[in-house]
Picture 1 (cartoon, rainbow, N blue to C red):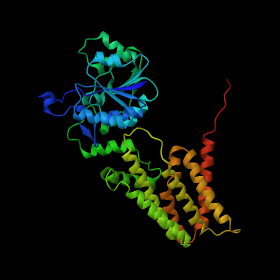
Picture 2: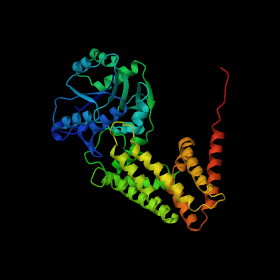
Picture 3: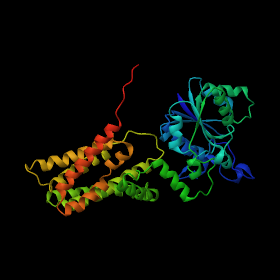
Picture 4: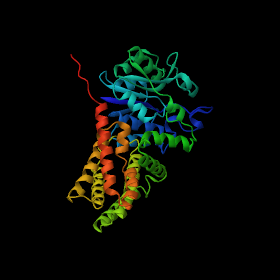
Length: 403
């Protein structure tokens, strides 16, 4: 079984200890406690159970327990190291996230999803931010993955030892590899040793941006709309407006279909552009709303919406493509959209984003359609798309080597 070992024992810094304020594990960041963010990471890493070192069940810990259960994880509180050892077997896999650590989810999952490892940062700037020194050039990030028998070896240490630091040393002695992470999450504040009680909105925004990962500017239309949608989602997602972009996409798409029925392709393309923008914002809302939730199979709604949008695109473009015989006017837009979908699935990463940018495609096509140049535009785009895919395939030739 893979389990997560978390902790909510550390006292707030400064005089007064726990009486001075909330413990670091219960500090809130981007709408959730640090402990809840750690539980989300555990769910994404495939953990089935959370063991949390804590003194007793209180309101904050009760909320974390409920959050874990909603994510499908069993949540158990352990009061001491002997009780912890009794709940971990040698065959278990243990993912440890230190008390109060706010991890960058993407970096954590990339580092610990494959096999046991200790995650580290360069000593500069990690040591200045309070991270524990690992060796001459690196500092421990506060996260590691090791086998369950490492927990049993805690019995050889004094009962008042720090379990996190002790498991770190045991894992290193057992030969765990050290993965040095890019220090960018530390610089940007998306991986923190301790969350301040008054975190700036800019820091929270950078954290959300790194987790949602909007489209690159290789796809300029989609990238711009996703960033605008993400700003809106940061303020409105989870409230009564969380389905507003979905409704806007449905209304604009329906009006585009009516424009196609009325043989008004330029108007239809404008409405389809609005529907594509709203659909992109809706996808961002869904990703922001699911931020930190356990991985689920994506539903068919968005995929179906994308297919319907492309079907409408073929219909609207075919109304303006003049060919002899007439059926070529339907075939050429259909082949063009098929190439766009093929490129979106198989091209190089940057080209893949561009192939999937329907917002840019529609924005470029609309003025040409208004001028009556749709046939020339479709022919030119067919040449560009097929040429790009052929060039991409040429670059990915596999080379056979003898055994």
